Every structure is written in structure tokens, then in C-alpha cells.
Length: 302
Image (cartoon, rainbow, N blue to C red; front, side, top):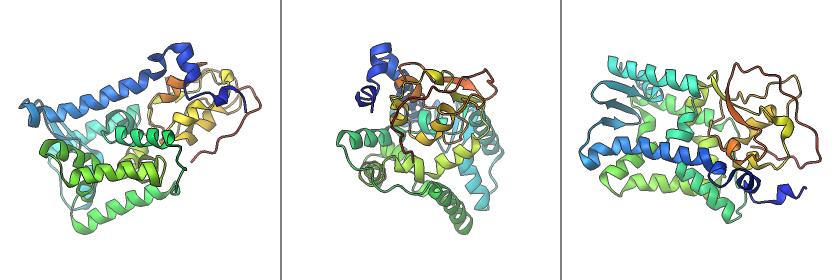
């Protein structure tokens, strides 16, 4: 194992870019998550009803409807034909996430993401064991189960237990069962399954991952030949298995991360001292030399 691999995560990047440069996208993500959450709280908290509703469905300035397509899909299966505004809102949201990557919702919008990130940080700080890791297909079984329950019960089933919706209710109406759900997600990721909720369970993330499979916005290991094997990108990535094909591909392979599991969070860009990663688009066909082989420790991804 190299000396570099023994350094704290992002230590090299901080030295090369400064602390802000090595946390740029993390800071932007937190600002984005707070911004979207506050938009929905301006009405109940301050009487400024610029946005009415929540992330499941909203109306901005009484003009722009936005609907979660996953909620709309459950509504269809439950036998409820939505209003035209709901259809329009779902089409707008689906088009945006199909363009920029469905799981951008998970890393840049979802208010549960800071909760699971905090659990992961504490998990590492306490040096806890990895814990139980569900099979990668578990998320699809949960997704299918939610749709089946909606069809059988005639309800939008996930909204009864959705931590995002419950968190919003808790912030509006005060402490109650909503906070139990949020704490449960935190504890699940802390002591049961490292990064388990977002990576292996949440059906919303599964839906948006499928939606963003063909998205245009991508992360690219454009300078993979400069990789110094520090492994920091694997350490910070919420879905580390997406990195390997792009970073460790041959000269003829694409450096683009094409998996729909990628959340486009930008942390790999932040923590990489040699600036291997960058945001690009799926049509980027610049010639990219393969990564130079070095003695390294392979990282199991899950």
C-alpha cells in the first residue's frame, strides 16, 4: 500500500486545491438541498406561498406545476386518473431528470441525503464494521413491491412511509412519528448497513436511476492516465461500483460513468488531487488514454 493511500481522505486534494476547492460540490449540494427545502417551508413558516405543496407535488407562483413522476406512476396503478396539471408537472420533472441524470435528485435535492451522509460520516468516525449489505437487486424488489401495494390498495403507498414526506411534515407540524422515520433511516445507515438506505433500499432513488439511464450529463474520468491510486474517489462515492469501468478501462473504452446509479454528486471531482474527474456529456468522445498501471490495493465495491 502506498503512502498516499494511508493519508486521510481528500488530504492531497486539500493540499493542491485548498479546503474549499476540495469540498466545492459538497458545499453546493448542501446549499441546493437547503434551498429546495426552504422553498417549501416559506409558506407554512413565513406565510410566503411562493411554492405550495412538497416534493411529491407542488405549484410555484400559482403557475408552474411540478409532480414527482414516481408518485404519478403509483397513482395510475392505484386507479386514479390525475389532473392535467399533475400530468404536465410530471412531464416537466421527468424531462429535466432524464436530461441531467435521475439520481441528481438524490444528491442535490432530497433532504434525506444529508441524514444518510451524516450517518456515513459517523460510521467512519467510529470505525464501525461495514455491516449487512443487501444484494444490489434488493432496491428493485422494494420498488416493485411499492407499485404492487399501490395497485392492490388503491393508494399512493410510498407516501405513507416516505421519509422525505415525513420530514416535511415534521418540520411543518412539529415533532412526532415523522422524526421516528428520519432517525430510523439514520440508524439503519449507521449501524445496520453502510450507505444501505440510498444504495439498496429507497425506491425513489431506484426510480430516478432508471429514469436517468440515458441522461446527457455525466461524470468523466477524462484524465484517468494521471490517477495516482489514492482511492479517495472510491471512499467518498455513494455508489463506488460506477467508477471502476470508467477509471480502469482500456484505451478504447469510454471514460464516462454511464451507470444510472451515479448520483452526479461531484465528490469524486472534489477529492481527486490530479483532477482525473470532470463533468461532461454522454456524447463526449475525446480520445482518453488508459490509466497507467501501478502497484495498488484493489477496493471491493458494493
